[in-house]
Image (cartoon, rainbow, N blue to C red; front, side, top):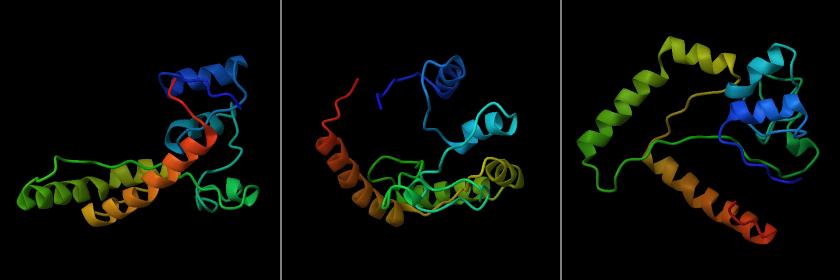
Length: 144
């Protein structure tokens, strides 16, 4: 495959519709509406296993054992942020995560909202950064 950079998902979706590209990788939050409208189909999910909200869609790992590239986001703050502010930020984010309208939107988009906290995030970054650094180096990937 050849990587074709776009400034946003809407431009990438339009490129698929126009036949300029064969497929795109994107978040179900952004793409599922096109599937539900019958304009596109999901070929696979990048989670290690099938997503409960889309049981008919295979995980790419079913064809490429060991493949996993989940789409996730994190919120970061400056190093040394006072603990009281960090605790407040976590409490505010938990309230947002637990809001019924956000939960409904996430479920509608076959996604989940998690809030793991600084320790688990640091552990995940310690695992993910070297993994993807190796993928980039092994494949000879260069920035566009």
